[in-house]
Image (cartoon, rainbow, N blue to C red; front, side, top):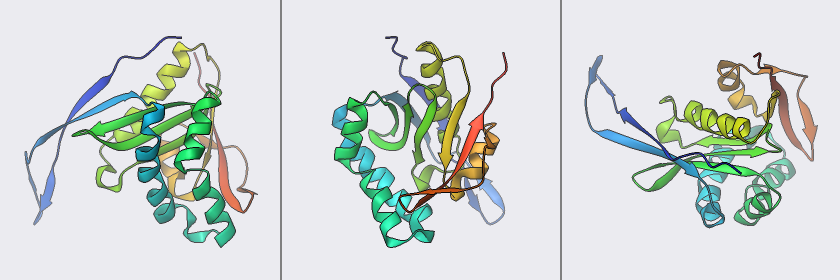
Length: 182
């Protein structure tokens, strides 16, 4: 199995202050690396509150509980053991983003801390995950079951809706597909 090198991206933080950009406040380095089992608790600590804030508000209590249970540390450990491949983005040693792939073709998790939305972190995590799938032999299309919240982001990545929303175990999602051409 090929391993991707660690990726570091330096981003300048820009602050909006009374109709002016004030910069540079500070430079930050985002490191994207392969996740390990030891990361599962921190990954869960990141993604569960994000799911609660952005995905589950329109779900039934049972649907919210099902989704959040699937993001608990022990669930993430099961995904690792089942062959899912995860990468994490770190800033200052803290996990601020997570991407997980199933079967080298299905984007299973993609979460970025609210503090880092709109800065290209999700796009870079997706780029790394897609490159890892390619290095591991996947040459076809990609799929994702998107929350309503994330549909716009996935469209920017080239995904299109593959069907109307689907509900399974009280969890509603929009199946999407990315068809890549050579």
